[in-house]
Length: 134
Image (cartoon, rainbow, N blue to C red; front, side):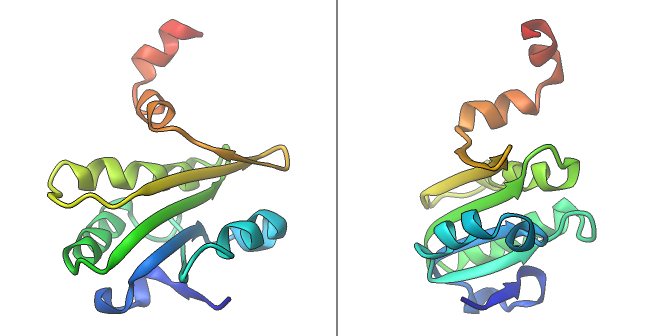
């Protein structure tokens, strides 16, 4: 499946079941990429090392506004401070979004594809709470 650059794609072209991966994800974890891309209609890359997260939030908010998404999946490289931000995008969008689209989050850690629950994403944004747990 062809991978397109999210930030270089018109918002009206993004539709259906969409997979957004960190730009290096397909090369670093080809098996996990193949598994996830098999259930997507379109695949986009996003590198938050080169694109500020606020730009990605604005872009994806506009995509949601088109009403053409059926499902959105994010997949990133675990422990990458830039890739980890990808999982925060939906939390920012959901504050202003009226529609609901199913969203899934994945990381690959030690070669294993892991589903990331919303509670883990919430906790990772709160270093105070996380510090008390450690």
